[in-house]
Image 1 (cartoon, rainbow, N blue to C red):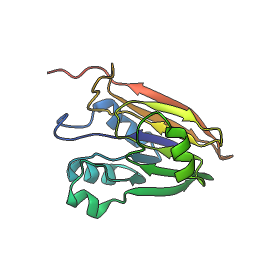
Image 2 (cartoon, helix red, strand yellow):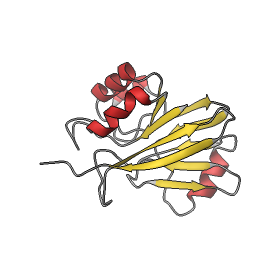
Image 3 (cartoon, rainbow, N blue to C red):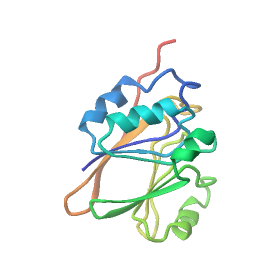
Image 4 (spheres, helix red, strand yellow):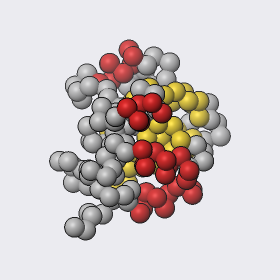
Length: 169
C-alpha cells in the first residue's frame, strides 16, 4: 500500500496550487494523508476527488468550512498498522514523550504545523512523521512531502522525504 503524506499546504496563500511532482504521485498512491492547515476547501475537494482514499485533519489555520468536514484527530488501520493524524504536537523538545503518552495505541503518528520534516521512533516503537510543507518551506531549504509503503505483512517501509525544486516567481 503506497502512502502520500503532506501537511501545511496553505493554499492559496503560500502557493497557487499543489506542486506538479506531488500531483503526479496521486495516481500511484493508495492513501493520501494530510495533517492539516489546508486553508481552502478547494484543496480538500481536489484531493477527495483524485485520491483513492484520503485521511485528513484540520489545522490551526483552517476555518469553519474545513472544521465542519474534517476531524481534529483521525485514526485509521492501514495494512495492520494503527495510524493517527493530528496537526499539532507541540515543541520539538519532549515530543516523543508527549506523543507516546497521548497516543499509546498507535504505530504511526503523522503530524504537521512546524513545516519542519521529522522522522523519529520513540522508545515504545511509535513512528513520528512530519512531511513538512509542499508549498511553504519557511526556514527550511526545500518544500517537502513524504511517501511510504505499508507492506503486506504490516510494516512501514520506504519512508522517503521528497524535496521539491524552488518555485518560479
